[in-house]
Amino acid sequence: SQQGEEDPQALSIQEGENATMNCSYKTSINNLQWYRQNSGRGLVHLILIRSNEREKHSGRLRVTLDTSKKSSSLLITASRAADTASYFCATPTYQGAQKLVFGQGTRLTINP
Amino acid sequence: EAGVAQSPRYKIIEKRQSVAFWCNPISGHATLYWYQQILGQGPKLLIQFQNNGVVDDSQLPKDRFSAERLKGVDSTLKIQPAKLEDSAVYLCASSPLRGSGSYEQYFGPGTRLTVT
Image (cartoon, rainbow over all chains, first blue to last red; front, top):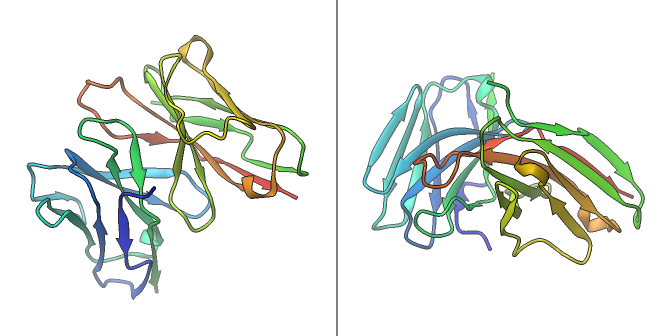
């Protein structure tokens, strides 16, 4: 069963614009993670946000977490062609678990 | 630091044949995972090892899939016999020991399996 659900399923924007994708989950968590997957490649960990954090930044990435709404968002600012990829949120099956459940992902396309 | 290694990268087999995938995790990582990723979907965990013991194999189709992690390092995932619906990318990932405070998983490049 999928815990995290990303929205939208696909997003196409122009280079230089910002991209926002959302994730909703169902159970209580102690952390939420975002991963990127380029076509034909494995997943790469982008950022982890803990349940006691509301916002976290890493370079051009900004992640927010609202535990009351069980939702998170990933913002990529000043997008580049290299950002074209699928983005997945992942949550542990229970607090403290290493086992992650992934959503079906958001397919992001950056047009030159 | 070397990443997670997987082989082969691609495999095409006929249904009812058998196939095996190999994974070498990041050195020192106690936990190893095998995921199945069907096209257009997120990865689904098949089995999780901690050292050489199975932690979770609740979603592993045990009638045809098997996995082992001898000596707590390398791992192999086998499918016998394969079905058409097994066509997917099989991803291996590793992470440090539970309780280390690190929750991130590190993925290999995956093996793309096509069953015809």
